[in-house]
Image 1 (cartoon, rainbow, N blue to C red):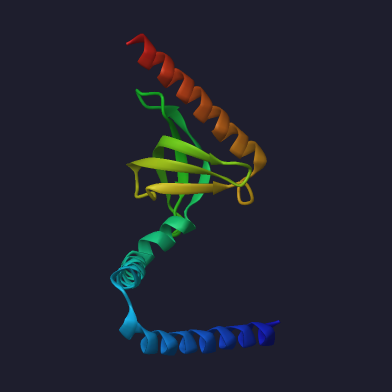
Image 2: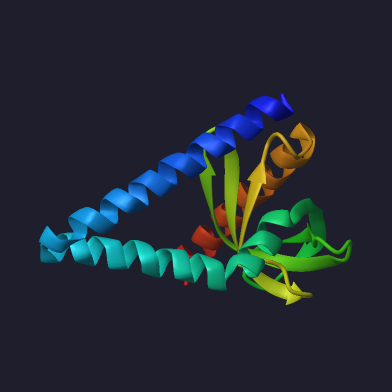
Length: 151
């Protein structure tokens, strides 16, 4: 398996080298949109390189369950497991369902430094815990809508 993966990596490296060689030869006749696309890709690569550590740490954070209580707006608190083993508490600002794959949470820190966005995958989280989180989010959304309509 390791030999197969090494061969694949070598093949990709040779293809990338050939592609860069061809790109260098054909770049003289490029139009403005082609140059802008290349600059956009280079800027995206630079941004990813600059923010790689924060993205990696955010991807390494895990959902550790519900925190006790809610804030005055009714948003539930969740426990976030940080990569170094510490825990942080965050409030859920909003959430998006990605079907059966995952639940994406936009977080607001309460304690610690959790990531701004947390992806809760059903592969990594117990089904009961994920069901409890979804139920809590639905109740909080209903409560917020009822409070918003009353005022």
